Image (tube, rainbow, N blue to C red; front, side):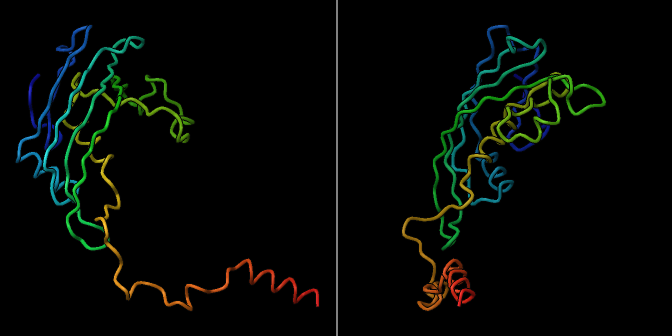
Length: 189
């Protein structure tokens, strides 16, 4: 595996020529500098630890395509959405991603995509495109970490300040359905 700074803060580039028919096993660990850069990229307080165990293998069905499966283990620190205090989160996620060669002039029609796949949220994700027969395994790990982050981290016991709680009379407002029922009853009279 060669390491180049192609696309990101945690770039670990694999040439597809290095992948044997049995696959390639990787164990990636982010350095302190890479963790700081990823935290800045994601807009969080800190990435305290990031490791990944990956396997990249040729797709058994589609020639020239590859499948990466892996486990991302990380510990991050984010700001609580209520108090802004640090909240630690442990992340342990598994994933599978596929890669296909780019077809010139198209989004990736050679990989069997059609417009319905883009519109169907339950459809399988389209394959990532290979760039010059290379896969940036580190960037894939960074993307999977970003997807696993809690969008609304909240510290245990954090509560909104009293000025943000509704007044009792506001909380007891009549439901819209009760208003409609009242209008219907008034219309009958």
